[in-house]
Image 1: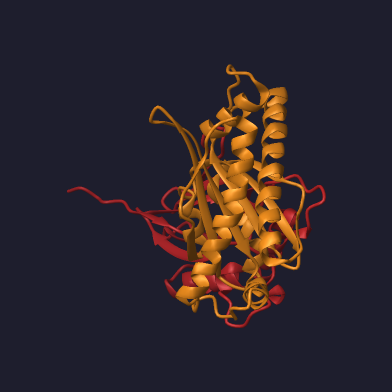
Image 2: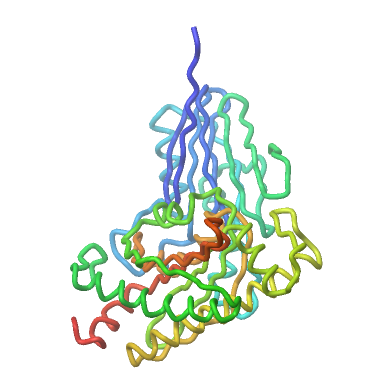
Length: 163
Length: 211
């Protein structure tokens, strides 16, 4: 019997969950952050791809909560708990500064704000960050395997590595 | 304005903006390189963020992206997107050095030369695009300094979408492609993606008298 593995793709401002033996990934993270919450024992994980730090900046109603760190992380936790996940831990990657700040407006430095906002959201929920690969100035593609709890990261000019 | 309710007529106006702007930019590039540059019919798309990135080849596609913030009576973002080999060709032409190689691995002085040459091309092209647009609309538009990145399309393009992402989950994009071909070999294929902020559309349509 063959076991079919599926790779679940998470887009921008999106959040999804996955169970072993499937894996979950998001492609081309720049200043955005990919946050993985996972239950090692049960092989359940979820991935959120946020774009902005704080939903209070939203200038429009009915905005997608998965776009912001402060709203996406609690929702992801809830999704996982509903699927029976317990003892949830976190790994995170992204938050690069893709362009030199120079004279650009504040959004050119959004990476650092996103990192802080995700860390803050996790702290509020008492979720421990096991490992992270954030900052720098390169884009990242990340993939999480709930079987091994490893997050693999690919950047240009770098071999794939895991955290 | 609801981003989903562009009339066919409004779409035509936006296409005309692409025609006028990119047409002038293509002329500038043609003079710069001493070669004929073709322009495709502009495409006006209402796209969510993931679709915007698909327009330039998908999130992992290596690209050279030049991003300008536009300020003035109309605000928004102009992105010029080319593939790495095509950026290499542009640098070769501009520096008169056919041996120049640009790849994802290029760094140090070589990368500095490429960044400098490409930024200058970006300045000229964006300047031409906006001048034509400014003449057409009678509105004042200025580009920021260029922000240049060589990386995965997803990583680069999302930066250009951050400003509008605070207001909406969709972007209206005026996408115009320019090409230069020689003996059926494609040397340059570049896209101008003009992404006005949502509030700018009303101003634009009002100014042109087609509100």
